[in-house]
Image (tube, rainbow, N blue to C red; front, side, top):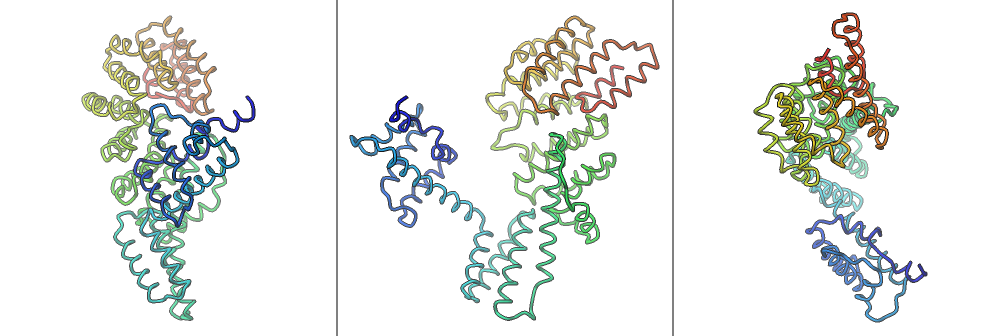
Length: 476
């Protein structure tokens, strides 16, 4: 490749094109108006470059060749790499300003806080007081009472405090209220961050220094702040994560989830639900089946309220876990309806295989082994790692229950090769290795040996993590 070919090559992986690809159709229209404003852009060729790139992004087979784009901009003028690069850089800077503008104007509360700060700095006291009152009204009217809400309240008190000091009205200070709102804002955010760190630690086996979280928990309890949803919900999540044997914390957390969901935006509530679900799943994998019904209720509530859906798409893992729980609880009619009802909410590229596997799981649970095997013959060929692994687990269970030990041995050998060959994070690999090891123990176990039976039960209970632990214990 000569120099000209290199500098005039594809733009597809450039920062500019990647950033433009993130825009929605509505944002494309707004950005065009943004570029057309002399306040943000004085270069007409930048608008022309944007129009060309947008047209290519909407084309069936986009052409992001620099030469092609350059020719559309400049006609027969020879390609100038430096000038073209500068034009791209200018458009990228405009796009970055647009992103900042969009972010700053996303929330009315943030806008009014910025306006209040500007009035205060300009000593426009009456306008400042008017903006503060408007901000207070907006904060009172918004539906959410999440961490962000408390941060805005704290920032507003800070502005009022600065204004009082600026006006030499120190006697009428609001320092106590500033301190109280800082506490609430910090406690809520610190509890949330600690919950996320503990969840990450469980999956990736990473050690974190949680800092002063124990002191925060103590302060929250002493100041009786649990009635504040942003604190209460994360407090009980933290307690449920760090006190796994105390189901009272999990029940309190579940109550807060159901009663306070409307006080958080959907994205944060989805994170909270997933944290709660992961706590329950971890307990189930340790053999604590008493949380099974509560976990199913969490899934049902989260899906019905569309909290666990993103842009109307239901994660295949959420779909699978919900069905598995319903089947374990013998809710066959509900599971059948659910499988069909939410099939079209699955991501298209995983839809048919995910649907087929879960339908096979339903037939398996109802002891309709041949119907299940017919569906699993298709999913066993899947290129998707998770569908393939789940299929191997279900095949292993079917062949074990049918005493088809030759077929079972073949599946397990294939299973071991697959685990070794595939790239997985450590926790995932351990899950599947434990399954294979445990089923080998089942195969060689003598059910008439009471001592050996007792020992194997203890080993299965102690194996962490182990999927379908309830099934292993039921076979002994």
